[in-house]
Image 1 (cartoon, rainbow, N blue to C red):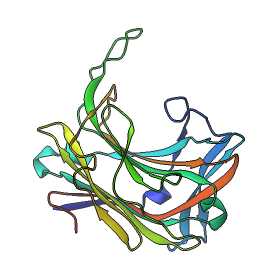
Image 2: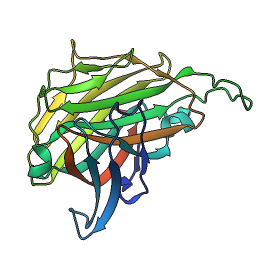
Image 3: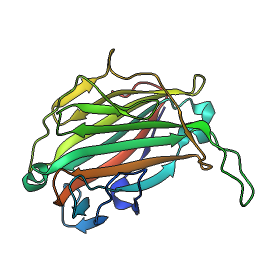
Length: 241
């Protein structure tokens, strides 16, 4: 069974900032849907203006987590896919290109006003980033921290290309695995010693959502923009071809 949550590029995206997002916040960070741009004619453009080196925030779109909401469907495989555009001027100052799927699988306990939130292992934190300084595609591990894969993609500039990001969620073991990713014709399937079978992350999330997060970081102070279009989140009970 395949269930597709389509056209995420058309939905509202919300900025999040703070030291747990990035040590150096962006001066301005926003997402806008521009009519007449991209393959669909309604592309989403994320812009980061940072007055300091290494500045970034993120924008997020929270969608229903169908794997958690309908466990009988056994939707263990997930793919985030989109078209992506890297303007050359932005590509030359892009420090990190991060794309995350964070799926809350279990509702954290509710607390009374004034009580400290209770955290449990309940989020499959399938966060990935292309580190332009090292060239490696990286996966967030446990404890949190970026781990290199063997993949060193070189995405093109000034042209729309296909991007995807695959993961597998094991609800019984409370783990997830980033299965692979692709930038245009350059595709990769993870294998040992890449980070695999990562435990769910501790959180106090109380909504069964899949949070898609788009984070672009400047290398040096300045402005960068990345385009996203035809973005879907696909859920399946079998590996997605």
